Picture 1: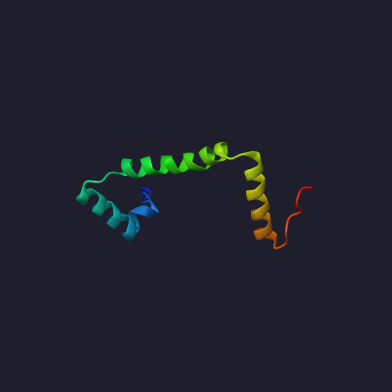
Picture 2: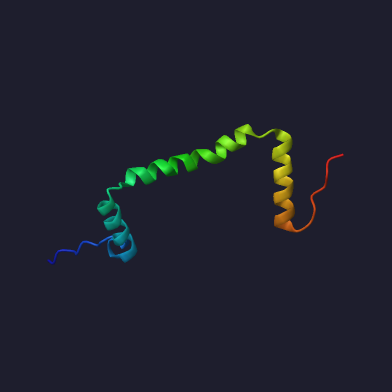
Length: 77
């Protein structure tokens, strides 16, 4: 029986990914630095939502609905 060939990941063939890795290694940067930046991005939305007042959240939601659906949202009386 013939052995199955091991498949390489798509990233192994992607020139841009390989070039990015080479540049990171050449400049002394590691992937841990980019992961730290991502962590801040993951926290951002939750931290912002926690700081907003309920009135401001409603205003943001109303504006988003208006932009999304193209008609003004009803204003509370």
